[in-house]
Image (cartoon, rainbow, N blue to C red; front, side, top):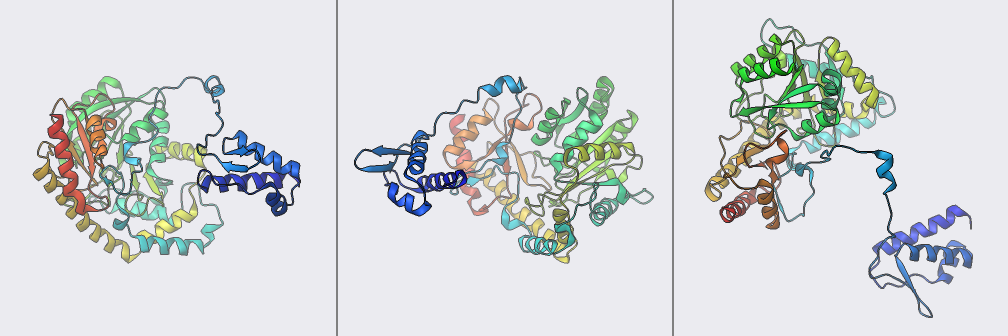
Length: 468
């Protein structure tokens, strides 16, 4: 029996042991010899390997059995400490990405529930894309031209009369907006340079900036967005070349800037020769207001616009785009090409198929109504059962409520206590680039089982009353 066959036998036995109950008898050496055509020495070697891994135990005169406590041999990764060197502590994931027990009420996720996605349209689009050349060819570095044109047309549709709309060439297709943030921060800001951000802001942007070596400069944001005068002062003081913001249904606060506030902020950025990095992640998640991309009003390249389809189409179709003009576009493209060469043409073809179907617009209209119903149900449930959880105003779009807790409470402790009662919430701590200004929870109203929102609100109310 050759070495690969021996390895196959050991692999088969490991899988069998993994699924077998403790105390189950392992097939006899004679049976294994017959099944694999192996010699007695080979079978004994396999049994010895399984025993060394702590998976089986031999009982002389009786046989070999699955161990009641299966402990793999200890592995020492200490050598990697010297090889990797030191690293600053960075978060690797968010509370919003956690998997939870099926019976828990999940208010922590950063995504809409599956029933809020255009599942049938997505499945059909993926099947059609698989029958095209996109399944076996490399896509252009900047993206499939037809998808570039769609993103450009979407932004141009919001442009005021007289504005110069973006061209197809201004669009770079990305494999998700997170990778776009990383490239923008590296190419436009650069390691060791300041980047102004709202506080609180998207936790993924905080992570991407840290990985890029960018120095974050937070400015406070409230129910109407950041103060343009404060932004101007910070731009002057720090010499920062960019401001990252979410003017439309911000994550986590849900705030949408007024048209006037947006103009004032873009003017401040222009006066200081800087960039506005506009993250329009929730463009398709409007409820009571329409998105107003600031980049559509910018002709001279101060706005770098980022839009994703992940939340509204499917998390399996990680397709996004950045719209940038001038040398900034070329620098971002250079960074993207160095990191991933190009985005899967198959995913691009499927995404383009979805958003150009008549069913897509129908889906968005239904999604707006579904999000409104879920948002209102959770808001009403909190007001009735958890009055200590304060909400400034219901968001006009997006996926989340940003709920302030009474002063003195620990948001992380509140989240742990809620989880002990099978309600999963996201503590607001990780959305602050510096110390939190107050304790908050972020609650996703787009999750599954909205009929359980009143139950979740009762649990949150109980936890808050006990903590107080």
